[in-house]
Amino acid sequence: AQTVTQSQPEMSVQEAETVTLSCTYDTSESNYYLFWYKQPPSRQMILVIRQEAYKQQNATENRFSVNFQKAAKSFSLKISDSQLGDTAMYFCAFPQGGSEKLVFGKGTKLTVNP
Amino acid sequence: DAGVIQSPRHEVTEMGQEVTLRCKPISGHNSLFWYRQTMMRGLELLIYFNNNVPIDDSGMPEDRFSAKMPNASFSTLKIQPSEPRDSAVYFCASSLGVGNTEAFFGQGTRLTVV
View (cartoon, chains in turn yellow, red):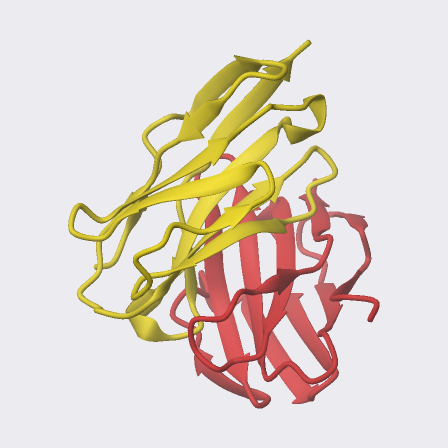
């Protein structure tokens, strides 16, 4: 079975500091996408960043970047210059079996403290 | 585009009653997903459609749950009869359906069965 594991149920960081959320996954596919979603208290699921597995370069979106280690099946999210608005649940996800079915990790609750 | 639209936002019902959740996907998207989110089990995929056809309903918990997609712009998830353990947030999401593309989520329906 293809799974996604987020080993940090909760994390906290001081405003303006950097935090890294970890994610590991298991798949037999060779080409796939990986996603990080954010769910603030409003409960809206928002796409933060995505990574294409065949690309060597790590994806970056403003203050958000990933560290993608394909051989290790690791896909961590780094948030730089953390802001209070980054407080949310963060979910790692990838399509199961190369299909459209997104499999989600259990999530990491991130709190940014002033 | 208005995004994925779900209704109602909140639903409180008595055990044994029928509940119908509604979803309007993003225009032009070919895949539609129903997810359930609980504290215990996280985000679970219940069923997904491609071009209005149910592709995988292996996540539907039992016969009390049914989903339909009569056309490209509308889907329903029905629970009959409802039970307290069905209390959760139900999300509808849609995607282009061309494999490995991100899903766009609605704001969810918080269902409470008393």
